[in-house]
Length: 87
Image: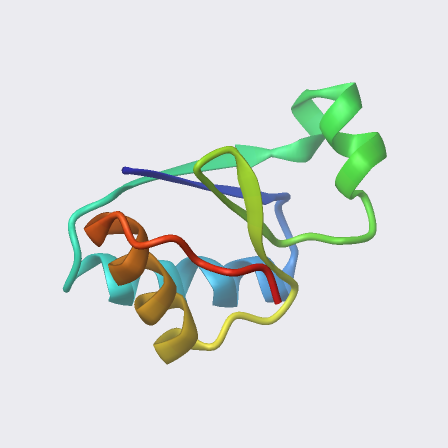
């Protein structure tokens, strides 16, 4: 599974989100891909005021502040193939 983190440098929330994802990744197998939104004009226009953004399975899973246990529960369900209702 690929978990994509849209972020940019010098973003405190982005650094926190990456730390949460890295801690969860230590317990669950997934590939973490971090993308700087400034490198893509479309991403910059779309997420300029919403970073960090976590994309799983091609859809937005989390924005802004990540709560570690929520992220882990979500990713465990995704890895198990259990559908997750939008909240």
